[in-house]
Image (cartoon, rainbow, N blue to C red; front, side, top):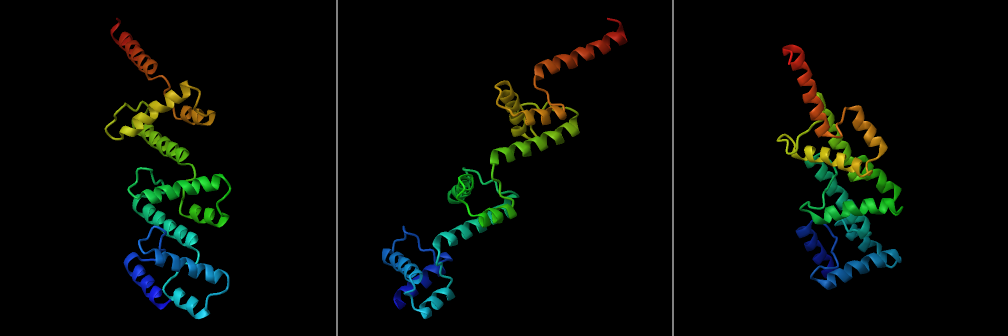
Length: 216
């Protein structure tokens, strides 16, 4: 027991925790760690041993400990990036997968209410598609306030993604896949659904003004 405790201490010094994964090279240490959890759960582990394991930060519930570790990773991500929108292409694939699983578990009713609350407290995004729509809508509002219209050109150098998003809204509406609420919100800021017709109208009005000034 003492020998394995020292092995676990060495593992923690190297990795920062006592979460020896199943894939760890020392299978005997993996089995020993599992036995300590099982023995404590069944009331067969000596109190002194429990105390000594507690002192080195032993994780009695590995699943909960892992969840806590990923919550901290997500908090660190938000501090650095300003949001909790960890994409699938993010370099830490495990964090990306964990974030996706929290959404799945909440949707299926399998996520504990306390965990939902803790994720809410750091601004977790349960529906990233809706969140991204809202972000781009606010960008479009800012564009309209600066330039007086919603005619964001494709490949606009300031924000190339915004031009693509604007075009995407037109495509979705044409296919009947854009919600009534979103159409209404876009209409309220003067969104142009047919830019070709809009440009024709703009130029026609310019021509009317020219005719009025020059008589031809």
